[in-house]
Length: 298
Image 1: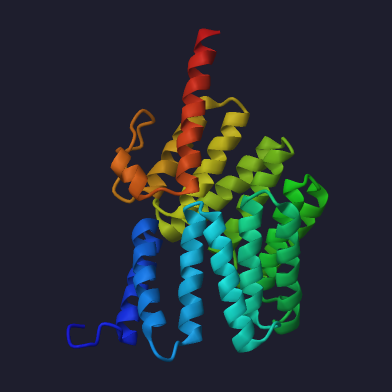
Image 2: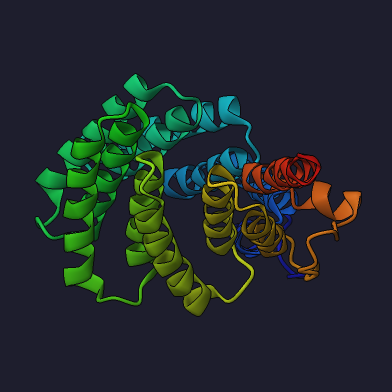
């Protein structure tokens, strides 16, 4: 590396790889820092490679989303969409990816109308460019199902989830993270319907798969534990809620492994690994502790 020019493509690629590495470790601040270094090099070149530029913007947008910076996430995904439309046209799979990513952000913002519009645009392109059993189509059905769930059209949501699960089972078999995602969303749906027995069944199936694939520390394991904690809190099972919120916190912070419900990571570790999932786990734990204390006084 020391013999290369400072704006060489290989250095940009190296920074991009470091960004991905920190992303996978849930260290989003460092990931963003390296993506920005990579972006600066790409933009400094006399002939800008649109593919690398779009890929770097896309990675940055995903980090912004994890950090809850939805304004920058939307603007950056729109840059990706514009670049890829210019290079590949409007009915290319890259456009479907951008529409899907925009749908995710609008969903986080509770703008379900815009989320549905973007998810449907994504699905329309996928149905044109992919085989009908392609996993990306399952992703679209899954995401549209989430919107139906959020607007309380539960029958339509379940129908979409079942379509997604069928496609995924045919493609991947049982022990795969895509199957875990379907089970997780079905568990959340049943929780919304107050069918807690079914909710636990599917959420625990999801957690089992994610844990076998990733181990105890990953975003997906943390998210699943968070959802089980939320379901337990709804049922007023405070001990179970606390256990799973604690496991969610452990899953998000790489060098924190204390499963004692009264133990907390340092402020430095929390701020370094901050994400909406971690915030929800900490908030959920606080609510569960408060409700547990109040119930003991009744």
